[in-house]
Image (cartoon, rainbow over all chains, first blue to last red; front, side, top):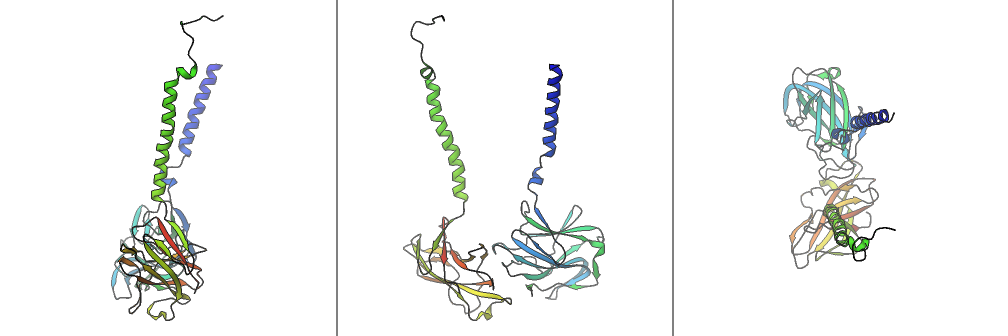
Length: 181
Length: 177
């Protein structure tokens, strides 16, 4: 009887240890960003910034206000953005489009909202553009916007995009970065 | 009756453990001290500078320099600034008088007192009077730093920090424009 009890207690402890091992969050989960789900036209408010994605379109060519233009498979995001707390290092450094495991950074070729310091309480309007491979015109993508490329334990605004459902234009001119009206 | 062992009287517990007790008396405070120093030194090195408030119209001494009085004014003719509708252009004006050593100071930051929101100085247009900060100054400097703020923001304090003196930063309280 005593022996059976000892076995039972031992097995219970092994099971408890296995459960603790499974239930404990991994380091990645413990440090994952605080995702703010964005919706078209609604402000997504993070800890240090707020963005409103106004429209997302696809184009076979883009141009900027300075006359630069290029053909390609582009996804253009028009948005408003502002800082919430401080203007120190207030650029949206994390601007990426995730398609499955592949991450596309915003193009630095056109003049856009990329690298624009955000102002506290004064929203700016502009565009960002992603240049994708020619064949990538369908599938689910996630637009991710954040204050720092190191997104652990900080806010990241995410917008789900269906690439196939995007309105496609022959050409789009990016918004000139300016104060939002 | 217990058996009597040894010839002399039995030594007490305290005297039998004297060496261990002395070691404990040394090691326990040493351990507390070492761990405490390790933790607190990290705290003191990594903490934010102490914020020292300065009343409106007053001056403050910091690292030998005299700072203040400070004022915050609305820029009457903000045409040189690309300000959005509804925004205000304010200017923080602070006098910095160096002591015996040359003085360097950061650009002042405008801090909204109720929320802690912080605005950095804008680039000033051509013809703007005054400095945005000071660098190795040996003569008095008149800082006149412009800011773009939303129309409904405020009240503000002007925050100034000296180079080489990261322990304290001044919150210069001002009359609101």
